[in-house]
Length: 267
Image (cartoon, rainbow, N blue to C red):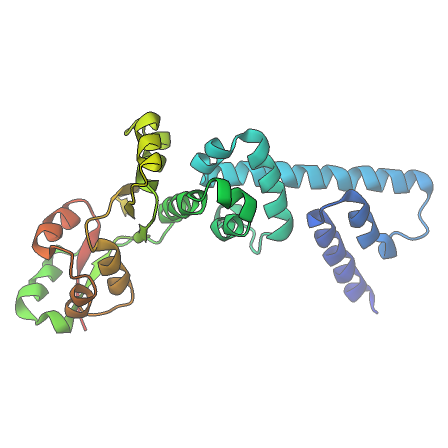
């Protein structure tokens, strides 16, 4: 093994050590590369590794709280911190921009069966929060008002609609829009959101970016299916067929006014 290969292997071992659950396992992971060092240096290395690991855990907690503030409030600081550590260890960042890390957190929650059995709405709340977080950094899209003339000049089967950056629909068995808005905006109140949860109210959510601001509202009947079809680049005709409950004429103007709908495109 040449020096370059040896250095790369040592760096990889160190990175792996940062995400292992126990400090003792972390030290074992780098043992091959620190053989023969003095006891004082060994102690210094162990303290340094522990510091790096602690800093990583603290960073994971801050990053996840920024992306999932409602889930953090629902779980409480102690429980959320423990989950952050677990998630950091099992889902190491794959890129340097940590603002893009955390998208697997909803699926991570689903796998925690004891937690989900007690608070089954948490994964859907997390999905909405990640959609809001992701829409904030999604690529900008420019509205093209002149393109809407295609709706008059083309058959619905020959045109599709262009949506705002990060547009996402989610249908849930729980009042997830109420829960998220109660925590983030205070409307409805937490008490009202709790009553809807106890009443087993089901809600569908729509997330999109209005200008530079991520937005959340209740989805109209059929809107989640309609949005999903458009995002598959299906024609307007096919998208409407996939969402028979949607009142397109009622949907169209507000969608343009709020920045959800940016334009039309011929297929």
